[in-house]
Image (cartoon, rainbow, N blue to C red; front, side):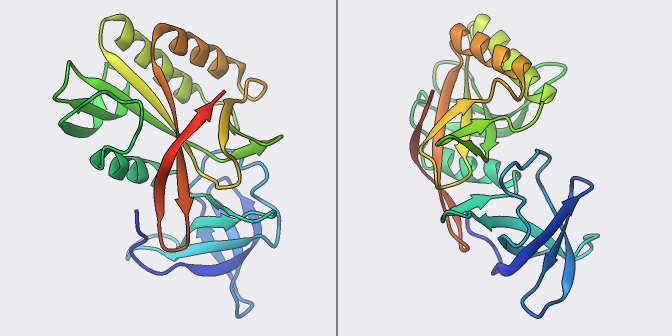
Length: 230
């Protein structure tokens, strides 16, 4: 997934009201950028962090969108969780998500049941394969962890995938490692016990739990092979 326009360097001042972040530009001016990340963003909010912004599309309320951050120990993190589906969509097109059965067509935002849309439905093999994507940006003790805050929506997706498997269909969760300083993923049970319980039930039922790494630069974010899920 290549960024359509060059990104601009800035320094984080503060994130507030969940979706707003004040940034200092190289000329010293302060701009307010859209923060497209609903999570807690633990470890990614240190004042002075080097961040990368994209100019907003015409008509947007804010002139800038926050895309990436440089990690304190080196490496990069993807801030914009909306990019995860684009990265995985390209990987699906390239048949570069290990662990999925064969398929011919990819349908995004597919209706699974009356309450849930799932990120992708794959068809053309032996019945549909439902694929949900989550962006993993929290890191603790050498592990990337999901979620970084409570997510009833995430647990609902797991329950929907579990129900699909139990009625004879196939389903997978793809956890996209949205930072390049970790090489393994686990569930943050202390952050959201209900999500952890839904994950364990889904895995036991046969939902495939797949980790996918990223190569992150200021030019592009692309899938970079499988990642172990603990």
